[in-house]
Amino acid sequence: MKTYPEIAAINVSGKTERKGNLTYLSWAWAVDQLLRLDPSATWEYKEPVYFKETLMVFCSVSAFGKTMTAQLPVMDHKNKAIPNPDAFAVNTAMQRCLAKAIALHGLGLYIYSGEDLPPDETDIPQTDLQREKIIRDAADMALEKFKGGDEVAAYEAISGITDNEEKMYLWNYIKPHSALRSAIKRLAAADTTGAAR
View 1 (tube, helix red, strand yellow):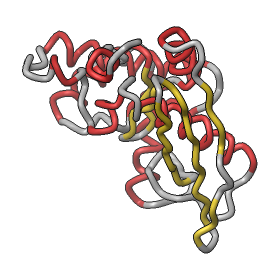
View 2: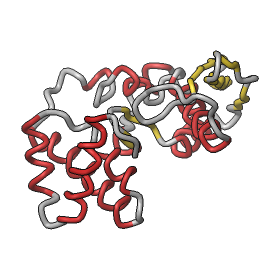
View 3: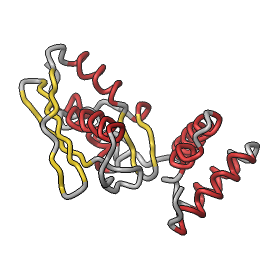
């Protein structure tokens, strides 16, 4: 049976997605890896709890001889709890909570502390090439969402890039895609002024 340090050392960075300033681990990939590491693993969702008009979901994952329970508010891409969430938002939160509960066993836990690499690799400084790859990946995701007709998801894919130097690299990378650049400018302005999108 794998130990916590062995599980925590698994690099999951290629299986994450950025939305706004948040990084999410793919729940489907996390479940797949969990069952490969412990075929007897199980999980269950607990009864959600309301806090005024917002909702907290819970998920317990039993694996590697113990049960870990995670909780997660039903929230938007800005890390804000959604008042009166609909079924889609609740389902999304439940799947993210499952990934989080799996992470409590070690798989991808480091991304919840804002780290880019597993604990045993954090001493390695991030090179410019690594930073550029992260920006290109975010830009490619934005372009894919934009081509699919979802401007908001396209904007969310890159809105976590706040460093000025990284923004310049991003802007140059998407230079051939003027329609995407225009949509990002418009949504960024709406985001800054608080206008509804």
